[in-house]
Amino acid sequence: MTDVNIRPARAGDVPGLTDIVGRTGLFPAEMLAPMIAPALDGQEGGFWLVAERDDQPLGFAYTAPEAMTEGVWNMLALAVLPGAQRGGVGAQLVQGVEAHLGSQEARLVLVDTSSGPDFEAARQFYENRGYGLEARIRDYWGAGDDKLTYRKAFPAPMP
Image 1 (cartoon, rainbow, N blue to C red):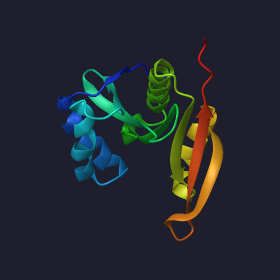
Image 2 (cartoon, one colour):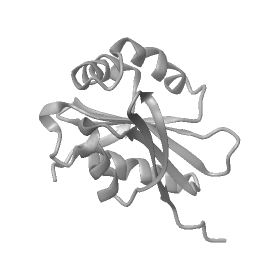
Image 3 (cartoon, rainbow, N blue to C red):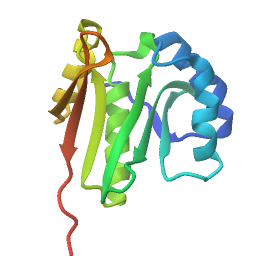
């Protein structure tokens, strides 16, 4: 596993994270700046973590609390540069997310992905980290492309 520094995102990270989004095709790159701005300004309860090596971002994770729930969080985005994939960066980001959520007394973390063949590696990645398939919404992303929701429970907080 490649050692990287996992830390909260900063405003100066936006260009590098935009590049990661563009190179991975996670979502349209122009969406990143408006998505991250509220978190950088302290206006939302979600958090962004960055994986970096030698001050160069390799990946990021974005996780936010689910509205009207008790201790449920959703990992809404996880991306790693193509050249750094399968080297442990994503696993370290997920560990960072889970460590942060443990300090927030999270009960559950959810993550959504696609049922399509291009997402087989993503599904295996989450399953290898203890996430279990919880729900399927048929034809969510498009005809024949289901939304799969994975779930991981956290131990109950000690009294």
